[in-house]
Length: 276
Image (cartoon, rainbow, N blue to C red; front, side, top):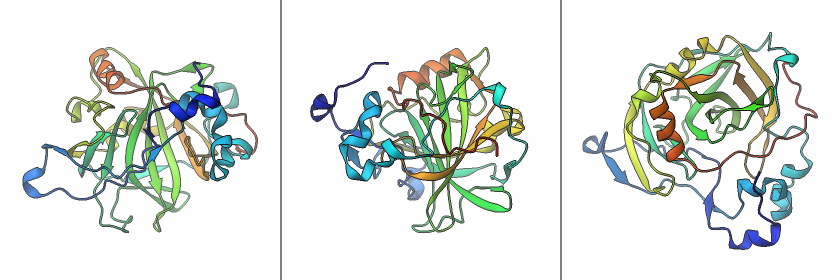
């Protein structure tokens, strides 16, 4: 992996932190499905994925990136088995949800509309009786997680919050090129480029479609982990589908052409409680 020495970080251009899905405002009636220029609400940062091993040195607020006990991502493998518990129930995902399609500075992303401060109107999954509300999704390229030493071309993250607005869980699905179009990605127009971080398009989408394309998430790993960008906050439950979501060659080229490197270095397994 290409890395940037710590002394050179001061000259790294401004980049954006992991998609925080704060561009949640409803568009005007006449703006729906149009491409607009908007402030997406992302905060500039001065760290880089290529130098993720040094994040803990950049700020005291990033100390968990260095000394955390449940940092993500981790390497997974079939020799660890699959989860026998904590099966997500996605019946709270409606078939049509309005939101904003954009680029989070590293790849395609989508944020659902909600009233400010209101998370309970969002699509939700239920795990062990707890509802977790999905604010949107974004793509990392290449994939954050490896399985059996193999790293997919990309990985989509469905980000979930608690009802009171705290990060709670990530549903992750690896993406690779196959022979046919993915119905999930067929819902969207050509991806907005990573340099066009002020462009935003208002669309309806079906979040359940990606779940269908990985055998309804019937096989998965789960572990206790963290955000994969500073401040590397811990306390999130990760769910990674065993099945890969396959796109067509052209769809994958569209995703990769709109993306730039956004995979954090893998972390050593410590207090992650894999499949527990």
